[in-house]
Every structure is written in C-alpha cells, then in structure tokens.
Image (cartoon, rainbow, N blue to C red):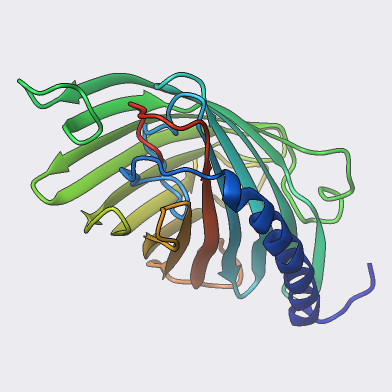
Length: 297
C-alpha cells in the first residue's frame, strides 16, 4: 500500500463502514427484544464479567475502538462482536474487526483483523437468601472465559496490522454488589508464541446502574508482558477510563456504548502505553421473547 495520510484513510474507512452498519441496523431492529440490563464488564470496557446473554439470546456489538500511542496506534473500524447464550450460564463468542494500524511515520495500513473465539461459563452464583433466584438478587458470581485469537489468511500480519497468532487467553472473572456500587474484576493470562510474549491481564470496574436505561462505570486495566522476546524490553499498558451504556429506544432494543480513557504511566514513542483509548458503539439484543435467568453483559 502506498504511504498516505493516516487521517484520510481512517476517515474513508469509517464513512464506508458507517453506511453499511446503518443499513444492517435497520434490518435488525425489528427483530430485537428487551433483555435484563445487569451489564458491567464487556463492551465498551476491556475487563469482562461472568454475565451471559441468557438462553437462546444474542448480543451483538458494533464498536469503533482506538488505542493511540504517538509511535503506534491501533484501530478497529468497526469491531463486530457476536455473542450467543447457550443456556443461562454459557456464552459462545465470535469477534472479527476491520483493523487499522498507524506507525511513527503516520502511515496507516488496514486489513482484516484476528478472529477471536471464546466460550464463557458462569460456574458459581450466590443469591440473596430467602428470595427466588433472579438477576436482581444475584449478589456474587464467578466465571471463566477461555478465548483464542487466530490470524485470518490475509497479509495483515506481514503488513504490521495485527500480531502473530495464535494466542490464547484464560481468565477468571467475578461480579459482586456492595450497596449501590457494582464491581467486577478479571485476572487472566494471555499465552503468546515464539514471536509474541505472554501477558497478564488484570482489570477492575466499579460503578452504578442508575435505572434500566443508564449505567456508568470507571475502569482500571493493566496489561503487562510476562516474558521477553529476544532483546525486546517488556511492555506494559496501565489505563484508566470512564464509560457506560445508554438505551436509545423506548423499548430497549438498542444501547449506545461509550468509553474514553488514557494511560496513567509515562507515555513515550517507544513503549506501548496509550495517551488515549476510546470505544464508541451500538449494542443490539436479539432473541425469542420470554424471561431469562442469564445476565446480559
């Protein structure tokens, strides 16, 4: 690809993808239904939680994501994240972005990102004693969410758009509620390969669901290399962000997802600490009508 302005290529990609997204959205809205709104982790946040969409329910997220460092920036325009509830405690995931990377010379290259496949299992729930089990009285839960990041058969790795795969992630996640504040956390290990280091991921979210239509949270997330590859120094991203979800329509079919933050360590052109991160997207909830016991994430 010839060297062109990073801003120009990102603008053209965004406009084309936005048009296609709006057309798809108009097709999906009539099929949507309202699901329980007890979401904490998951999009737009980095940290995930044990919540699942519920039996036979779909949660589809279209997100525009940015991770910007002066020496290297990475974008997903958009990221398509599809989740299906297989029973009330299991979630199946497939995620695929259109990725873009900008280097220190402001040269941007775009291509198909990695496929991310996962299976979430919420294996423990605790409910308020003396009440029937429901999302409303679930005060603690634990889960795990094994995932695999796999390169697609394109030139994205060779062109520096995505990292070499495969990589695998094995986390433990929890969610709890203390008074009016909801918490959820995640600790996990990314298993790298000969070219990419393994990493530890640790995240914590705290916030409040003000009503069925609005929720706001703060997040701190730490992604740190566990080993070196050759002479390369270990890298670490330590970020702080604020974000939330806002229902857009009266029936609760669509939700706006938003998050913005920055690194809380020194940012240089040689490290991976971002001077800003962002997520803006739409969440669509689909599935047969009827109550579910799962907690949509």
